Image (cartoon, rainbow over all chains, first blue to last red):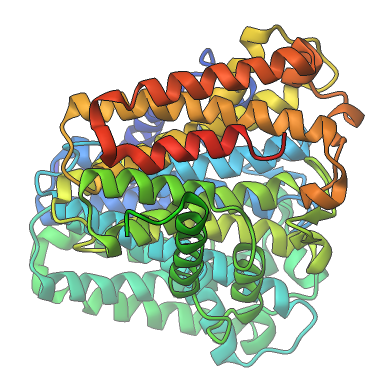
Length: 297
Length: 297
């Protein structure tokens, strides 16, 4: 297992996440059929599954059981996908394309997109609160609380609100970082922490992983901004150049392209440095940092 | 305490819920300020607090601690209010008035309404997953799972989807009941169950309370339909007659006004009958059934 090349490991874990999501979401034959169909439409069959990959990699390091990690990975992905569905709606980013497919409000309608996002958020907490999911109920409650904190008004949803308020404004690098630490970073951190909580790491190890996760979260957004500035729509699987067109501040608009790339490399190094004490067990987390920084450039 | 007249008890518990919500929601001085302000705007200072009242009444019967019940009551109310905020949006019911105040998308904007509902849902799970909230972590997980099931695609959000699909259609009484058992009933049931789970009732007692709660949930909707048909906007605090105007099926449109009133009385009796084994301890639940049935007619 551990001898797999990174790209093979990643493909294997992505397929594992897909199978887990297939099982975790209500079948579209169950009423209300259209809602369940829309939840499956937008969640299955696409995405890089970065959050599940982080859950799996951190969980393996922590010695967590595979079925527990599958459910934690699905909970993270449900929160992520709900945020995308709502973010794409006309009153937010008004995007017609996501992961190469029509967005939910285009494929279905706005009301269905609203309810699909709502129900996916609930699904995450439904999954993660299943009786007996974690061997230790206190760690399970801690995982639920971590996820809720990461997703809510002082996490991801709060980051979205700050993003919304920043359109057309000049932000400093500090303000931009604050926004992204919430909007994208909080959920990335939660992915690593949930994987770790599902196992048996102590608080010191959790803290070191949290620092890794914080760097990865920012890194992910810096790379996203670089990609948005340089990639075309086909490569990206979503409408490219939207941020500039929407006059949204990005790392590229504030630091320039070259300095943004330097920052990405620096964050990846800092992330990897936090893993030093874990040795070979942290190999996949190490590789994920390099993967994120080198995705397309 | 237990000698208070029902109306005084209710006023006292409503004020208790208001104070608890004041504390449970992030202050509007905390970033993102506008989002937190909107969350407080729509949650505080109004509403009959039916779900908190049910949490308090069931929790008292179950011997639960007051601080635990306060948090459970707030979690229920956050889910309820989130559903109202999203339900009022232009792509759903497009309502401008709620509890006598402009709805969130009118007072703020649509994107803020979307995020406010999203963040209120997360807030509910954040509150209910707080470390040490229940003496027994396994019962706390059960409460979280109960809430998630009640709110999600096979509960409240699913009921909304069925409601949406039913506009302009003729439903049978069975189909209407199915819709309401999900849309309104699921959360009402969860309120009673969360109060009960916070204490120490056994599964048999929980089941009897669940039957009470199921009757109350339907009763609540039957009464709502009657009120929507007969009341004016000022009494209702929201736009009256909308269901008929939107060609939405209601108990009144299917059964007629007089038979709807008979059904309400019958459901209240059945609810009260489920409480028989609890004696005087169930007094407030008993009174709540009567209160709901006699609200306005």
